[in-house]
Amino acid sequence: NQTPTSAQSPQPAASTPPPATGGEDKTIAIVAYLTLIGFIVAIILHMNKKTKLAAYHLRQMLGLILTGVAVMICGLVLHIIPFLGQLCHLALIVAMIVLWVLGLMAAVNGQMKPVPVVGELFQKWFGTAFD
Image (cartoon, rainbow, N blue to C red):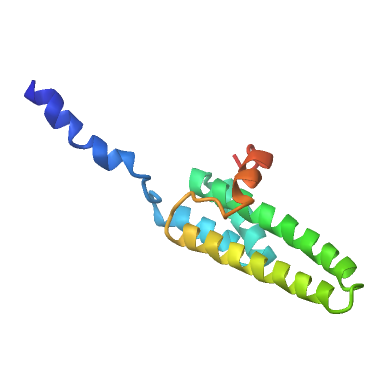
């Protein structure tokens, strides 16, 4: 009976999400968030050594880039409305910056944590990208 008890002691540590296994995993995930050029560099680095952490954050950043393009297009339309449109566009830009920072912080910490509100959708939509 004591053998199963000693085998169970490492299991609680395994129930917590493990951090990135190596520095290269986190590096690619972090570089993905550093502008569009960083995203492209991260894709190239990821092609040489594919990791789950890097693929996860590449999908998150791809979603953020596409959402940013949509925000820019919406901003053009919103600027037709004199003051309120500009405030709405500014709010969207601030929200994008907050999402970007939260994604970057998850990458720095080696976590596969989605950005709020849209991160799960990005994983669903781009689920096989970068695998």
